[in-house]
Image (cartoon, rainbow, N blue to C red; front, side):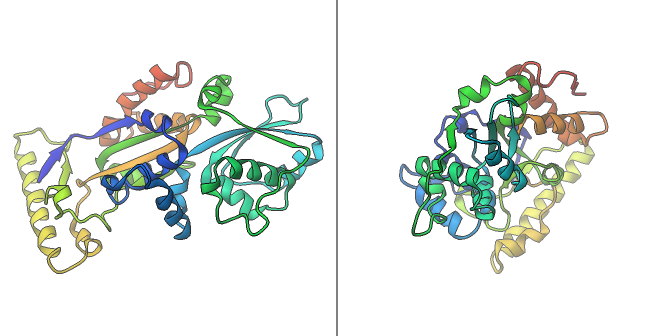
Length: 318
C-alpha cells in the first residue's frame, strides 16, 4: 500500500506537443499505458480510437480558426446550423469574419452533422489538409473540397494568447492533471463544458508490476497522521487492498474494483477554456466547497492568477 498527497499540475508540456501526440498522451492516461508511447505510436493509437468511437479522447486537443467569408449569407447559413460544442465569436461585426474554437471532436462532429453547409465544408477541407489523421474516415471517395468565398486560417497558440481578455477567456484552453481521490473526481466531472479523461479502475490491474503490485491511496486531509482516526483509516485501506488483490486471483479488474473506496488515488485530466476554469474556481475554492477539493483547487487558482493576470481577479481561495 502506498499513500501519496493530492496534487494538481498545469500541463504546459502538452501545449508544446503536436496535436496527435497530445491526444495520445492524454488518452493513455485511462489505461496507464504511457510506457507504450514511441516516436511512431500516435498515428495507430488515434486510428484505433476513432475506429472504436472513443470520442472523448479526441476532445484533448483544441484549435482556433479565423474564417473570413465573402458574404453574410455564408455566415447566416453556418449560424443557423447551431453547431455544438464550439466557441464562436465575431470580433468585428462590420467584417464578415468569425473566430471559432473547439476540440478535434467538435470539428469532426460539426462536419458529420452539417456536411452541406458551405462554411463547414470550407473549414473541414482546410483542417483535413493540415491534419489528415483526424479526418481520415470522413472524406469518402471524393475527399474534402475547398470552398470559394471561405478563407480559413488556423491561429497559433501565441496568437490565441495575444487575443483581448474577453476573447482569450473563451478561446484559450488549458489542461490540468489532478492526482487525487475518487470523491474529488466525482465532483469534478459534474462540470460543463469540460473534457475529462480519467484513470480507469476497470482496465488497470493494480497487482501488476507497473503499479508496484499494490494500491495507491490519497493521504486524507481529515485525519492527523498518527491519530487514532488516521490509524483506523489506514487499517481499512490495508484490508481493502488485501481483499482486492485476493479477488484478482479469480476475477477481472472491473469486478474486483467494486470493493475499492473513495480514498483510492486516481488521475484525471480536465481540459476547458479559461472561462470555464473561472467558473470552476468560483465554486470549488470557497468555504462551502469540499475540503479535499479546496486542497488542490486553491494552489491551482494561485498558479492561474499568476499565469493569466486579470482573468481570475475577484476569486479568493479560502
